[in-house]
Length: 296
Ligand code: GDP
Image 1: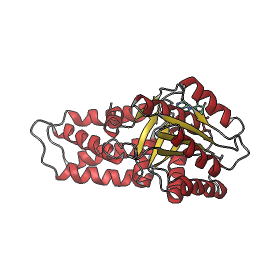
Image 2: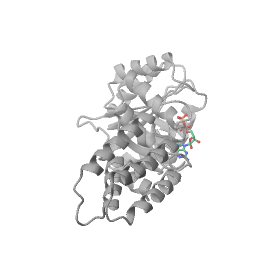
Image 3: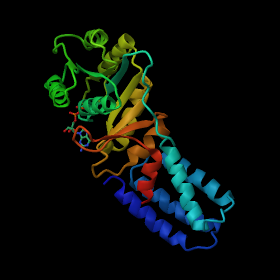
């Protein structure tokens, strides 16, 4: 499970602190050195770790210890709060337009889980009362259109497609009209990905954005790729201005650093987590619950 290594290491560190009645600055330093090592081992961005350590130390050394807690528990509480804060603090909601249809543009590299996540998201939001339309705008990857159609059929959610001979911009525009005439109030566009970020991909995504003015641009990234996911998020955010990130494969055996770094590095919140291959394996991302999991 994600973070299992990190959770274990942090628990070990905090076990040493827990029994202590009084904490010296050296105790705090010693514990934070271990926290730092554990975070770096979990592939958290170096600068993020440094800032984190500084913040926790300032609060831990300067703080009045709450009477209900031992000093050791107090440090653990501060680490918990700061971990949650690092991931955005509160759960970030998706922007749903008051004037339908809401347009959500899904972007990301190939293999990150974009097509699957488009289907999962449409399913989840339908449960909340929306009437989704999925749009197959990945005209380059062989079988991407078919894949979305199969997923849509499984969920009984319509999929708009114009084959692979039209431009993604034309497809996206036509999809919006289609949604309007069929009173669909949510349009989820599955755009093309590539193996690497390239200029042509970005230019095309910019054109789609300009044409349909999405309310929400969500980047889908694979948590297993660690720092790569963070770099990808940074690049996409610079070019497109992301509204949020979906971190997939959090069910896998990852080191979890991407979850802890993305918000701090890019400013974009993680809004959803993919936790399996099934179509209901998606959940809103809760920073505080993630911090619970990390601290065990
Ligand atoms: P795309 O190229 O970005 O559209 O990626 P796909 O949607 O085709 O997904 C690539 C692979 O990742 C597929 O085998 C999916 O089943 C799998 N996948 C997607 N999301 C998750 C997830 O949250 N957990 C797991 N375990 N697998 C996932």
